[in-house]
Image 1 (tube, rainbow, N blue to C red):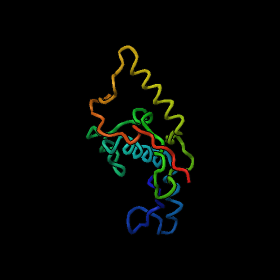
Image 2: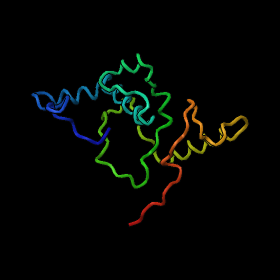
Image 3: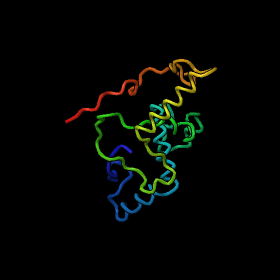
Image 4: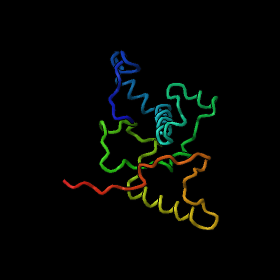
Length: 150
């Protein structure tokens, strides 16, 4: 997810022990690994305001900070133009139910549809108030920069 390779056991769960790389790969591809990966994606999609516990996801259910994939998946955005990343996304290879980033075109189409629905009869106005009662503070996508040609 963060574009980082598997972490060594000296710094956390990892791949130094015999069978470690195979176990790490198996865990990431297991139903639990895909679920925990989705849980962590939701944490980032919703600006770090929920799904805090990657190692102990049950805690989110106890504290009321768990948000299901169905709620946040439509809020995913493509990478901003000219965004710098540390490396490719490292996720489950099978994508077994793990949401993928939308293309820029799909995101723009969905955004236009939401705007059209909000501006219709009984629509939500300018969108500065979010559905859950929060207020939109900043939106990195509010103005699309012109692509830089080299």
